[in-house]
Amino acid sequence: MYTEPHKHLPGPLLVVAALTIALAATACGDTASPTPAAVVTECPSSPIPPGRPVPAQGAPPRIVVPVDTSTSTVLNPGTAPQIQCGRTPISTRADVAYATVPLPGGQTKQLAMDIQVPQTAGRKPLVVYVPGGGFVMADKGGNLALRTFVAEAGYVVASIQYRVQPDGATYADSISDVKAAIRYLRAHAADYDINPNTVGVWGDSAGGYLAAMTGVTNGDKRFDIGADLNQPSDVQAVIDKFGASDLSRLQSDFDPDTQQAMAPLLASTAKYVNGPTSTTPLTADPTAVAQANPITHIHPTDPPFAIFHGSEDTTISPSQTLILHNALIAAGVNSTRYI
Image (cartoon, rainbow, N blue to C red; front, side, top):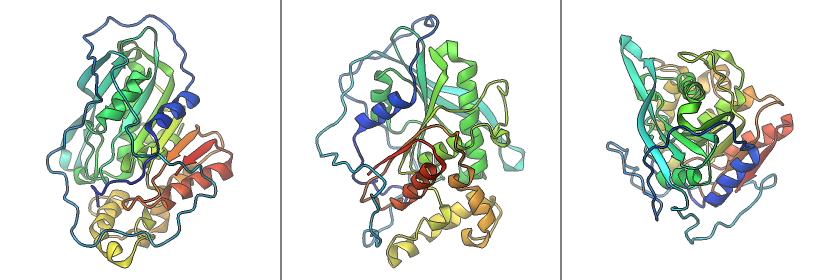
């Protein structure tokens, strides 16, 4: 279930447009010393990480409920290539360590990020990219083509690692890691030409879920753990691409065979919510699941959201982002959902 493609995704140009609207890109200060920049004529592809799970064989998953588009903008993205790179030189700094975090058993893990900086004058808005991976992996090398495209549009893009369920992590640990990365980048804003006042978080799938949770927990100090605590972890914009919201209903919209095939995912997700040693299913503790749901944390002052979901996504049902979008709108938050 972790590698089934997310279908009929809307145009990448809208990701940049949404960021541009949400983040007021103001230039301030001088640039840091220039570093060697890579100029590409084609958008680079991401390597396939080792150990990626193989999709289960059998009948393809089917969504058996209608896709609700009543509060969303419906797009037809077409099939032609939508992005092109090579407009702007990009400097990339790989494997920048940003935190050392605890693991069960007294061990620790060093988390790193890859940072792309457009070689243009002035400070730039920052986008922290949170990769997906079904809560079991977090490959910071993923989605390189679109990250490069966004960087060339004038954003510093930092793709981050974070703790996942096989590390013994819970969702709260992953959120803390995202916020630690944001604080680190604000503390080192001058090193990467970042305007620390304009920070967005962008994620796909599991990363979309974590991006949403990061946005709705602005100011919640329970998730600010680690270094650079003199820096805020708040964000000014959220881009949620086909992220989950209600983890207890991940299988609800699918046919019976698919629901049965999703059992291992649900068991892993239950540990991600309740803790690595827990045997409690997601449905057995509604309070814990509610705390892991971004709608529980929504506040009218939350940053603007742009939400994207494919109408034929058979990994994360479109209803997952609909739940979040409608709750944001009801609370008075600026949210736009594209289907």
